[in-house]
Image (cartoon, rainbow, N blue to C red; front, side, top):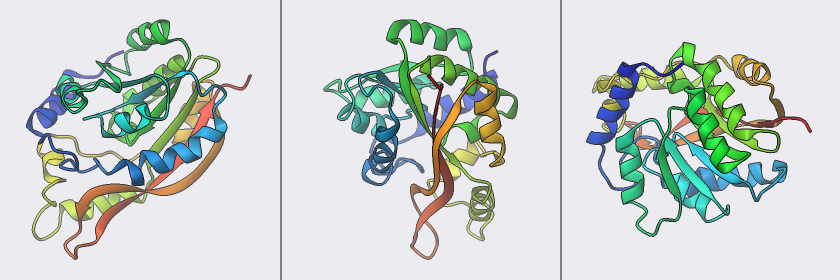
Length: 241
């Protein structure tokens, strides 16, 4: 099962239009307040820190490059070829590797697992962007990447985030500048009920080892000048040995 062509084309259009500079995209926050915070939560639960790490939904690679400074082998993977090109362009030193990956397509994740072996996975704010019918296949494919020893660090918007986003989109002046392209390209975020995420993981044979809540930091500000932070949840999951 693969993603729809409409969904792929929406992301291609978004990333072709996106500016090159870091922070120009809504979720492209500084790693100091994103991946840097997440690594501290993730590392204590790793069964093997020496495994490759796959940043699923890497976008322009800001978090990928940070992770490459902390793990021995890092691969940034994204559905969009234009996003992967952004990431490669921003990483002339080749700190990480980048590849186009349809994570819903299990044959593609099986091929990546055959190449890397068991891997740890970092996935921030991706599940809610997938079509509803693609979410379980996506988690199943993540489980394929993990194998027996890998661990998943998942950050996902909580239910409370959608009203915040819709409120911003429907404000008197319309959506903020960095949020507007998301809606213009038909990538309106979907709600993932909080209690369904553990169900997706359980169905994929994964066990949750730790969980909590943190705001998902964005690069955009509200009309009053405050930084927009979206309610989100995080968890660490993998197979029980």
